[in-house]
Image (cartoon, rainbow, N blue to C red; front, side):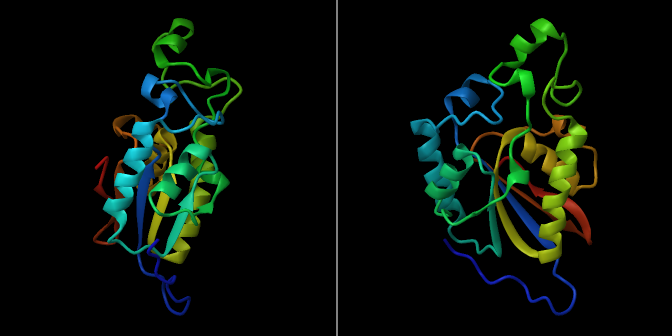
Length: 199
């Protein structure tokens, strides 16, 4: 794992660059089942893709590497060469409550037109709940400055992208995010911006 030392605390912190990697494919993600707290292992294809994304990250140095506590994210980080990533509870996937393990068509049999972005998850988190905990993660990374790598999840990473931009979590509905892709959040003229998405 190639990691450089964090920026010095003397003087203003440099602008942060946030790299996001969604975990590798699981059987549930392949089938479109909402997966929050259920630990579903990576498929063989997911493990191979995690190794491949590690090759793509090899030439980049990071000041900090963070990871969701879920096994699928930690396994992706390890296979990518970042087994020492710091586990951060705030990076967990959206809590879907009663909808855990269900697909969107199955949920829509109960609630027509349902999406996680527009409707509640009974017994789970709201968009505001997710935004609040991701804001804490962003506050820490911005205080540090430098380049930060995050291994996380689909909906939570899309929400993180929205909060990086200072927008509502619900705007994440406009961002597609596939397993084991790389996205980069940076700045343009000192303003938060999306530098790369779903690459």
